[in-house]
Image (cartoon, rainbow, N blue to C red; front, side):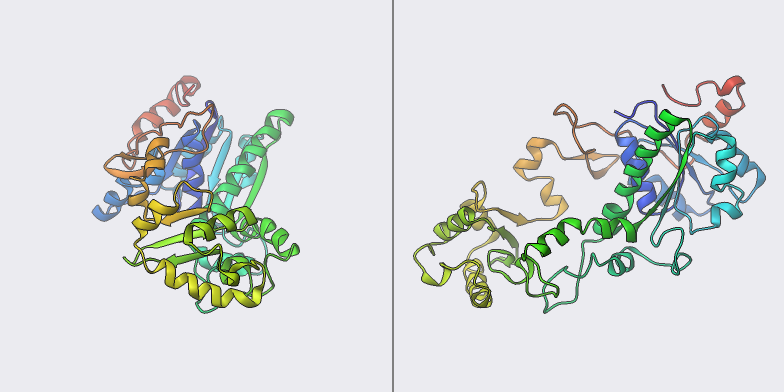
Length: 370
């Protein structure tokens, strides 16, 4: 779908590479500019980098005039540059937006950071959990009895970071094609993860969620929760709507139990949650799947990525696959019902000679894929 979109990625860690991979998954031509390394360990890690799939890899030292020149020549006919340096680093390297956009006025300069390009914390180090802590996105994670905990990288690096950068980049490209003018995209995880709270804030306005942890549907009710099973596995139920709640009670044999008649009586939630905890602990995860899966109870087992790859629904949709010796998830979303097949993972610097030869050829012949 993005065939013809030309992207230069200054490789870093986390959300920037994920964004570039996502765009490559959707058909963009991505040239990943990687740092040189002399360590065997570094080479091995780069060779197995899942986030480089579908890209072409060139090694260049941006601290040298030669390395900077390679980047400037690459962006001359590119649509997008992606970088994830701390604010000011690209400028110190002589590759800031002013320099790059002087070389290519239509360039979309995508910047990925945690705190953003401005603000009191802009120059401070941080990671996924720090950014979503400050944005408010971590506040409701988990129950009141436990410290907030979030899935590693999902809410911040990917959700609030990479995907917002991707949307910003594509918006910038559309604008550049309309106006002939590029733009600088300041994608910050603290911004994106805060924006992701709009649905939660809407639910809070409706009274589904309170201001504090431990008093909301997702962290204190009995009908929207995660339960431990007899074998140590876990299952989730999300029977919010009355018809789904009634179905849950029916399958559990509780439809005649008067304690469950007032679903929204919050005073009863702690006791009902304890009661359901005992019920769900009486059977294995597999037994609950046999009883509740494929019903409208709003149910699913909590499974690992390896288990997910074997689940019949995911197998039917071909969500996971083995590629380059590693478990991978196919690109999303689908178009016309078809899942795209991503490109292979390149070795570090695999395309250095090919790209340099194209840069040195008249008219940069065959630098970018058609």
